[in-house]
Image 1: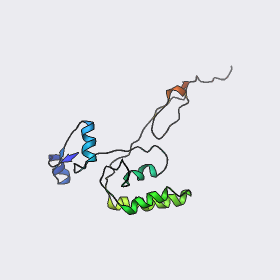
Image 2: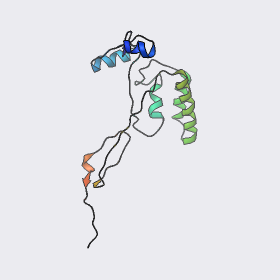
Image 3: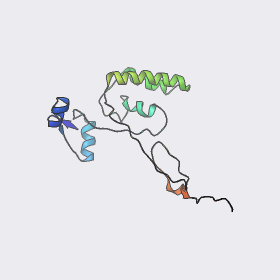
Length: 148
């Protein structure tokens, strides 16, 4: 969380800020209480759909720790949940995302990325969105050499 005063913030952004390190429980309480100017947050999508990121900014989401509310945005996200056609759903999500980006209650700074160096001998390895792997299904397989 940032509070007034920091030489770095003053030099680069022309604002005075102070970084405040807190124990995790305290930090979560402060963020939920909106007792900050700026807070760092992160999110990892756990399924392949725009809703995994867009739903958290609805006024009724327990994960919305921005204090931002927009009834039109909420209505669009609820409407998208009722539509089965992928193209129509994505069009509704696009409208919602436009509102989110115009009002900008967040500043995206970076995206998580992962690099996995996996041996060709390793079998059962399947990349996934959460980057969680069950070692139960992994095994090594030796190179199959052709008979001489």
